[in-house]
Length: 95
Image 1 (cartoon, rainbow, N blue to C red):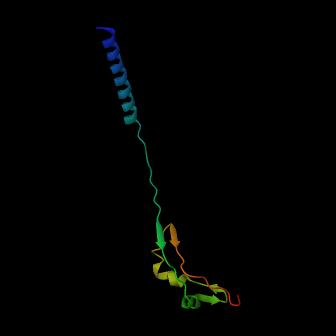
Image 2 (spheres, rainbow, N blue to C red):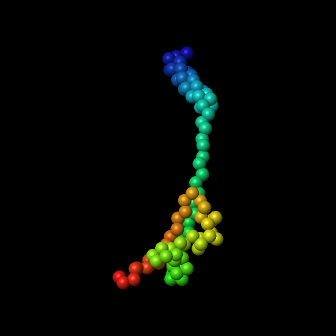
Image 3 (cartoon, rainbow, N blue to C red):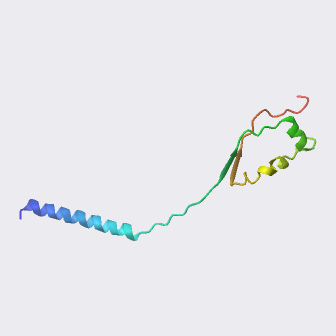
């Protein structure tokens, strides 16, 4: 056997040893992954017109909008709820 063939066999043996030893380590190591769940709800266009303000008024400049959301509160009972308020906001009288 000449030196070229001997070197070639040595390289094949070295690569084979490296491949099988690293594969063994991959099989022995078990990774544990945990998953977490988050939930979102999105609501758009919360329009607040005069009748809504009037029905939600509890005192001068004090409002309670909870009754309006009573029927959909289960739909908004996620970890994160995003609501988009569309329209203009009222200005205090006299401005």
